Image (tube, rainbow, N blue to C red; front, side, top):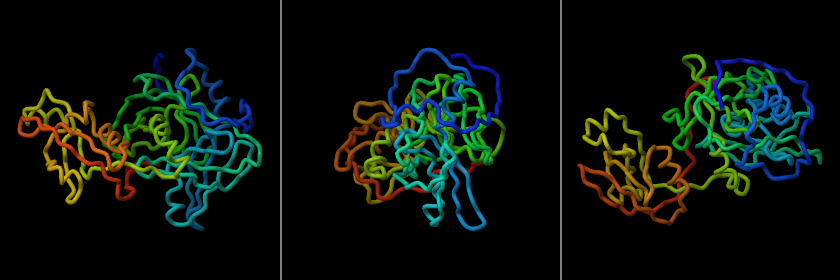
Length: 348
């Protein structure tokens, strides 16, 4: 895949059904993709009918806009949690404009505030909806061309183009997220819409743009949705393992100052009293090198691995403390509460 200079295109298409198939299959989760690329116009024409507009009436005077995309023709729609969060917390109403211009009120099938993902469901009245195909965000390379589709400022079905500027952007909010960075324009109202590769596959969920600078948009990798989708569909929420500690990614300067410049791992920044981490005598300043036999490279990787563990089980952490390695057995607890405040303070 070749990159190209920054390009901005706004495409306003008449909403119509296109390529919906029978719409009765489960979400398309195949990681196998065709080798050839499509044109921007072909992708826009194919995917626009599967992208929806979301209107959230917070109060009589205040409303918020967002986007979403259909992953199952029977009515399952993905968006960001922060698009609908205020309505859930404050009793507002959520409306979805479908491709055939029907406006319906969805039910909330599930949500995960910690990763900023929500799953809506609408009654299709027996009329299958067009769907997107989910790609594999792990195969993305820096420089790959992408499209963002959504409703910035209420301008529905706007398409913007750019590249993947970076991967695994951390420290932007959320302990489980490695954001994709793109220069495809993402503006208020784009949140929840799809980020698409040039094979027409959704590889990210447009989430926010930096409030400083230009061309700094961020999207959740679609493989994060893959991991959570079974729980969201079955239970409506996500159950995670928990240790009771906070880890950070040490900078090369910090590792050098500690004499650990040749080591990789995550640094323990906080251990909560009364948790399994505290009972296992993990300390602030320990460098976690491995979880069982798996090397640890980033805080988001570590957090996801712990979250995927079943409460009641045990893991072995290999830590570095004062230039000596130790192996500590730690019991996995259930996460005590859904974490809030994970959405970055940026332009939505």
